Image (cartoon, rainbow, N blue to C red):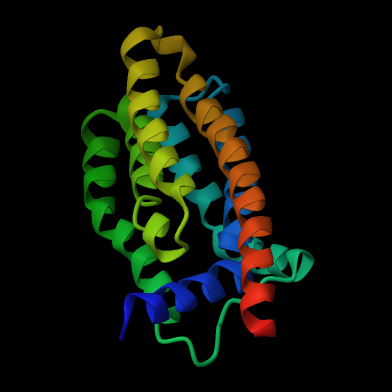
Length: 191
């Protein structure tokens, strides 16, 4: 397969899946709820458990949003399509670290969860052929660590709130990138 053929396949994924915007908007909603959870007066352990629970509806919510955004989850005939699911599953192998932090240092749970979530975006930069995922993976991971190092323990909610802000930037960037890709794709399919 030539580089040109590979780029065409990635362009098709970018356009038909709209750069995964349904997942990013779903994540904005989930992380907004998580931000609220971390403002509550529960123990860090209980807030961490609630964070896990609130994260559960991510996939069904993304599926519902895919109907609203008219995104395609399965791009028939595109051999790269299954890779998107595998890239998403990769973050599950970091969950034992989350469980360890939950048990040993629950006050750091939300930080670890943000870093894992943010870092897992990195390979999608290649998958959708957009720098947005690569840049924001670094911004989310390093930014959340910087916040954690400089804030008071009572302000842990700032970490998931930062995640929400970063996801909003990512969603806008991905939408703008999608529009450019769509023009390129339409031109390519007309030839």
